[in-house]
Length: 276
Image (cartoon, rainbow, N blue to C red; front, side):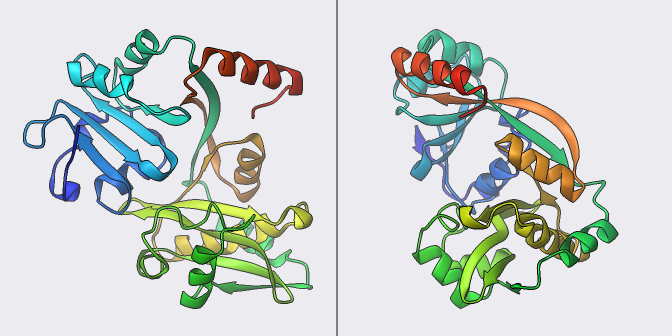
């Protein structure tokens, strides 16, 4: 597989009729993040969208082509997977039987968002907290210091400067301490993917809903679609509180590379009675 330069100049969306409900595929295809790999740069049959730093893969194109099996055989362990075209799931199971963990994700629509409701949530921010829009120095701080609430932020941007050009975000403070961030995790022509993180010591105090509401209001006022795609039931609950409409759950896959590890993970999930 070789990297396709300038993927934004190619019509590659046709290879992903079943792409996930988030905007990550579009962000990669538009050249904002990650890599686009193909078996042939001029006449591709198999196309993979990947974020190498987290081993994230969206598999597209002809799953029956020999290059598809070859790619899966070399797949690194602990790789999140999305099957963007028919046949890939079946091929994966034939190559890596019983080495796949299935997790639920939750898709949402932003069409029902109500600005009046969002303003009420924003107004509920406790008086001891302040919010501010993320500027360049703060974006640089978030990018440089990966801590509890910053490590998942700005993942779809090449730099703090790139975030300032294409992204938007707000942060809440307790005095000088940043305790919650609601920002674009990635951005593309369709809109942004919302990423919210709250300091664990401050959870349950309405910060995520208040700061998230402020971010979403800005998006609605500026014609930006604030997409929400939840990895946990907690995130899904916050989406519903903010006014998103549920589109239902869908399966996300993780190749762990070991039958024993799959058995261990599934046993632990049953023991805890929830997703891990």
